[in-house]
Image (cartoon, rainbow, N blue to C red; front, side, top):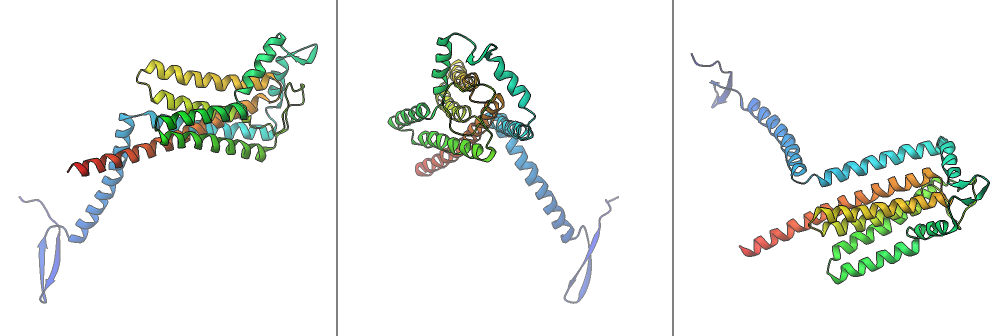
Length: 281
C-alpha cells in the first residue's frame, strides 16, 4: 500500500486539479526551517572545529572574561569598603611593629624593593617598549610593533581612566617609602606592567618552537608583574586590593588585545594566501 500523502489543488486555465504530495508552500517552509537550523548548527560546528584545532584563543577569551568579572567584583567590594580591614592587616604585616615607618627587612632589602617597583614605572616601561619596538622594526615585524604600541598606549589610558573614575585615596595607615601623586585604585604599576610584560612575553613565546622556552618566557613575564605589585604593597603606596585589581585588569586587557591581534593576523594571512593562490592560477 502506498504511503499516505497530502494533496493540494492548483488551478490551470480555469480547471482545478488535485495533485498528491505536499504543497509547495509547506515544502518551502520546511526547507527554510531546515536551512536555518543547519546554518546555526553549521556555524556552531565550525566554531567548535576551530576550538579543537587551536584552543588557545578560546582559553584566552575565558581568562580575559574571568579576569574582568573578578575585577568588577573586587571594585564593588572596594566601593563598599569591605576590603579595608584585610588591606590594613596586610600592610601592617609588612611593617616593623615598633616603628611603622620601617618596612620589614634590612635596609638593602628595602632598597631592592624600590628598584623592583621601578620596573613598573613610566620611565622603565617606556624604554622597554621603545627598544622592543625598534627591534621588531629591524626584523621587519611591523604588525607586532603596532600590537605592542597599542598595548602600551591603551593600557596606560585604561589605567588612568580607572584611577580617575574610582579616585580612591592612598593608604594612610603606614608612611609611604616613595613619592606618589595619583589615585590609588587600581595600581597603575601593576596594571600597565601586566599589559606590557605579558604582551612582550606572548610576542617572544610565539617566536619559539620549544614549549619549554615558551613556558619559561611567559613565566618570566608573570613573575615580573607579580614582583612589581608586591613591591607597591611593601613600600606602603598601595592597598593590597589596589594591586590585585591592577593584576586582574592588566591581565584581562592584555589577553583581550592578544585575541584581537590574533584575529587580524589570521585574517590578513588568509587574504595573502588567497592572493598568492590566485596569482599562481
